[in-house]
Image (spheres, rainbow, N blue to C red):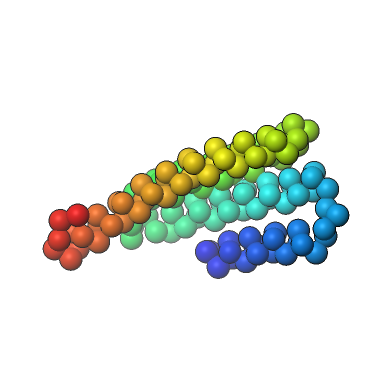
Length: 118
């Protein structure tokens, strides 16, 4: 899943460079599609890993936020790129918090498995 997600991110970047005259609206839809696909991939990964990890809710939350972010971009393209900047900032903050939370949970799980206290 992560390889496919990474490949899609690279494809989005390459397409942006291949079409330098890309309009803001097309770029907005590329980012929206990428965010939705990423979110679905994250939710699927969390479901697949639910027996392997604790705190899969954080990955699901990140996935849901990605999907919502993509849908908002697709539904409200007319608000302009300024809204994209704000949405990217909010998304990055919330998603970063969710990933940091997951990282601490995974670290705590690793510490308990090795006999250490995290």
